[in-house]
Amino acid sequence: MSGFVYNQLKKICESLGRHNDALYAVLAIAMFKGVMRPTFTMMDKESDPKSKKYAAFREGLTEAIAFGSYLATHNMVLPLAVPLARKTGASPKKIKNGLSLLSVCLTAGVVIPVVCNLTLKPIMDGVSKLYNKKDKSFGQKLDIKENTTQLPLASAIYSPKLSENSKNLLNTVRITSIQNYGMKVGG
Image (cartoon, rainbow, N blue to C red):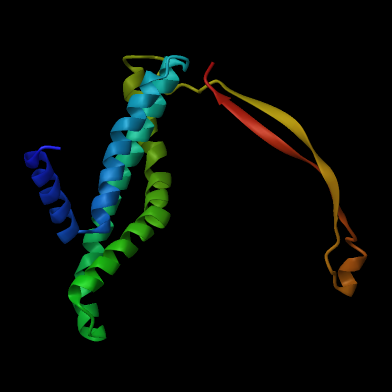
């Protein structure tokens, strides 16, 4: 590696290390997923074009929601750093870094799923209506085929300890097989 490239790489790494924040990592991931997942979805030559358009748009929208959610929760939680540092006597920088990590975890585990559940369907329905004026195939019911396959499993008997009242209702539960459901989207 040349000296110039090495020095530039060193400066970038030192800068990222000084300003290390969990938020930066998740924002970068959301940005790359928001670009790459729809791109790869659209590159699939075997999928139905209308299914690809719908799925790619939904994937991009999901990552846009994630990006905004990470920023919003981070900005709501970050002001708590100074008061917490005063109460605990800890360094405000350490409290800030800890809150950043907690906000990322809270956002990924709770906020993003809730926001997506509340917003994706209405947005996709609205986009489908707008798009249907131009292309009648976008957002129509997808052709979903389900295959069920029985997988044999050794018989097992489960006998829980039951109270006297429930012994008459249930003695054993026999599990003889499980079912594996496969789903194919598109044609």
